[in-house]
Length: 178
Image (cartoon, rainbow, N blue to C red):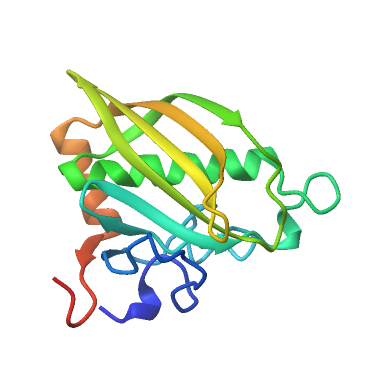
């Protein structure tokens, strides 16, 4: 699959700190209209999403169009980013789910235009309920800016298959990657 058809339309974003792996698998998906990760949504965030082990991550500098108070990222945008990395982290365990509950703790204001890294991971499982956690950090300082927890309801196998077929997602490693 052409990398330009992967989640997000631009090149891989820069600005990750040295402690964060630059490797990891890219989650490729057919063009779609999701606000957070869909490349067809011109008003959306068009996030590039990656898997590294059991974690989904993305890096970006939030554009000014997602500003709340002057110079600061809107809390709803930060919540959407957290929801996205947590939901896609389920792919690491071959699950698809829908958000049932989302809790977000805003630790520090997140300025627009400053490189951030968001990562989400599975934190527990109870039958069809999948618990996740996430955080957003300032790439330059490593400071935690936002933390979140969410519960997803796992899709039944037939619905999960329909979603996989509709979005055609797959996990690919960059050339030379492990």
